[in-house]
Image (cartoon, rainbow, N blue to C red; front, side, top):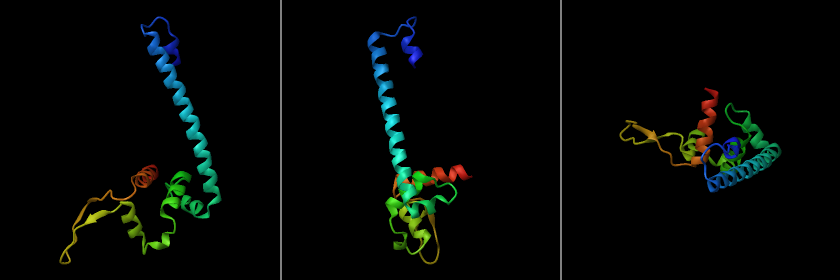
Length: 126
């Protein structure tokens, strides 16, 4: 982009060049802020024993582990892993009657951010 803005041979108006330059500066600022927040998340992750244990699961890194720790809190509130998965929206909806189980699509009822992080983690492992 900087080469495009500085190239006097192209026919970009001066106001458009200024706009692109402003947008690039804003993008650089946002990038620095993301880096600063990521450092803070990783520092919190290092201080949390639960978050560090979650990171040992394949596909879960510091950001996913810290998000899970912050959102779920005490996992002992769930009787089993399926209940936690259902709370996150990772299991199929059930419509069962008379001993006949019918599984529908994934419910998508839980936390979309956590579900996205976990799905991306699974994709990196497989």
